[in-house]
Image 1 (cartoon, rainbow, N blue to C red):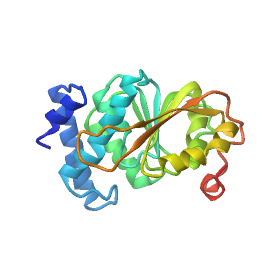
Image 2 (image 1 turned 180 degrees about the horizontal axis):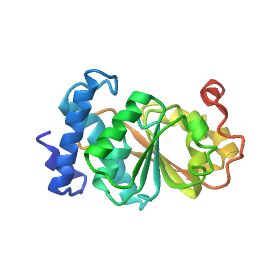
Image 3 (image 1 turned 30 degrees about the horizontal axis):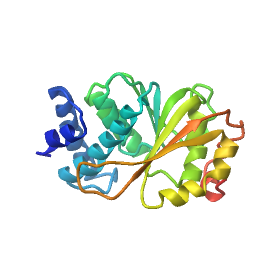
Image 4 (image 1 turned 120 degrees about the vertical axis):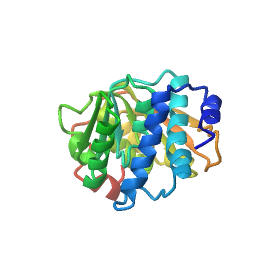
Length: 237
């Protein structure tokens, strides 16, 4: 993406030549693997940068402005690594866990983390509903990230159990953001969360309007949550 430097200037970010090279290699490997496995619907380099890298970095800008870039962090339903890996490449000091339930995607994440020699990244091939009951992960994170995983009431059940008290969930949402916020009142009360902010995601490139929803973990999540796989989506709180 020839305009990457211009985008970084608009986001008030600086990357080292190595970080720029890491993004380039990430894009190349993603497109190469995507030919034979369905990692993402994206099929060209320009769209990889615009829809995945730039949107992830715009989310990072929001988090930086509010002093919410925290470690350890967890990316739930990471897919091909978004938004977690671009944030990790740009902020190398963040310890990051990527959770992905699909085996082919989890293997891709493992391979690109190794290829880019990213320290402090763990890939876990698991369902969030099951992993959140593992004592090693439950209540263990200060920041949770999630993108296009599920409607907000469902997403809260999948993510808040991973957060320590005062931890924050950051999730970009599209045109249904306000409706999802209204529908999340019961889930927030049940799971121990509170909406901290709903902020416009300022993108330096053309793209659909997005809202970043920030949720603060204000109290403990009852042990019964999340429910067994499939239930959060089938019967949202």
